[in-house]
Image (cartoon, rainbow, N blue to C red):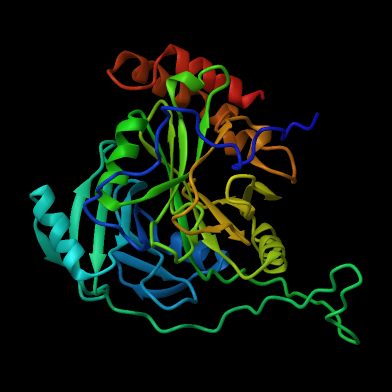
Length: 372
């Protein structure tokens, strides 16, 4: 039997399991807007950003903005800091009134964003300690030229005749920010917070082997825009021994752009973490890289788009279930390489001592994932 048996999203919930959505959320955000980081070396961040496929829109001694080719805000905001850290995410409100409603419901103040971004924001903190901004009315950057998807001959269906395929080894131009993945010691509390405050809905749940009765340990979560399709996940949350950024994903034109862009990164000495392959939950073709500060970033293409009529899928979390095809998942991607072993061990010991959702049973489930 295939290792992928019973791993797909068509398998739904059992009676009494999490609904995957709040009954009466405060607002329903429309998309993820940008991510914010602090880094000590902005020059290094800009050089990698260009090689990864971003275009800088702002560069001062203390701040760097990186955009994709789509209309909208920058995808990434990097500010100079003493140490490297993920600060938080901004989500796009459907309208300004939603920012005001969310501020009133949470007792927070609406503030104006700096002029390079424009618009207004209400700043919240999720149960895991990450900053969550809900924004509206920011400046809209005009569309930039993008890489055009190639014309393919599929089997006997001929679309390209008397013409060759010659993708250039150049940066895979980022079109837009797709999603961010976060780890939390308070997974269920944090999940419910996002569903209730931002109106997000779950596309897929994952659970540890033999622990389904204890509930999920990971969720892929999308925006609820009614009958308008949105990304399979705008946010993904997973239970773990620390509260941290896991990775973020940026859409590119197609597989050729991704592969040729990967060669461009490799030739410049950057580290591929895992890829190229195709995921199961979300279906996207992926390629993961480490930036010079150690952050994991993903190129993706051809992801699933769902409207709000689909109910959550349920599947067991396994390492082999991370991809339909591609190279075996790496220790670097799983966080099990020797370089991170000491840090992970300290995080585990600390989490087991604290009052949170990561206990011994969950630790055993997580260890099984790495070998499954």
